[in-house]
Length: 172
Image (tube, rainbow, N blue to C red):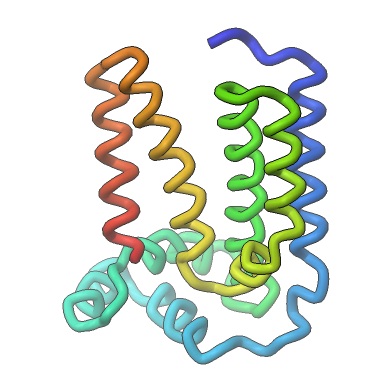
């Protein structure tokens, strides 16, 4: 893979910042939803407690494990907890742009990034403390790794692809 040009870095930063800014709009306007309470509550427990809960909970443990260090560092305020899906959604926009720019070209990458930015479902999930933004992010990464593996097989890519599949299974 070639070294990114300065223009590419500006575009990547712009895609991230525009998505991030847009998804921050009215971030704490709605109170914490019923489902979000579970993510917030369980992510505060120890890793053993999170894993124990996952034995009977309908949701696999990865998102709560993912939130665990965030809670320890930034606390459980509504703003703090909702920043996680906002960041993941913004990273998804960047990953979508990079993936499409690599395989379909600049115009398709920008078009998809704009469509993603204004997608009501991506906006909704970017403001909900649940694993949906993580699932979308990891899904795009897994598709990219799968294509990369088909282009040039390698054990390392296979391991990363297996890791993304594991995260997907353990998130939803």
